[in-house]
Image (cartoon, rainbow, N blue to C red; front, side, top):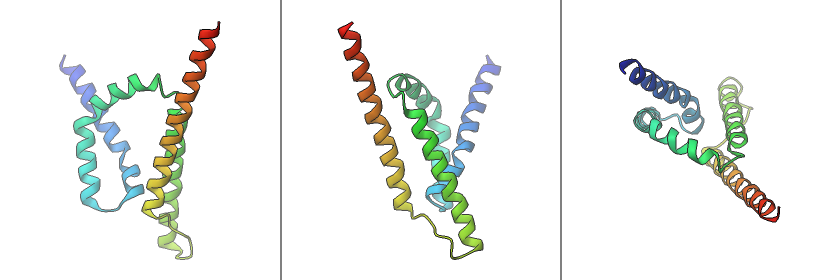
Length: 125
């Protein structure tokens, strides 16, 4: 049982460490980075089970999350490049949040529409 608890705890730690680049994509404030990772460690296990149940309904979520991670990666590279070459543009924080929210909203709506379409097709058959 102790091995199972250790494995679950390590999964939480890996997920929290994985979120560090995403947080730095939004802000560089060390306090916010620390607090978000602390809350991630405290709540990721419960969030994982919620997401597992929601993933069946949000069938396009994996594409949206991939797009968000790619956007954050480009934002981090542009931020680094701006430190080396000042003529390289930086992506503002509000634009980053807008892109993330728009992507999540679009993915949610398209998933719901696809689920509705499938239910209507199943009802006709």
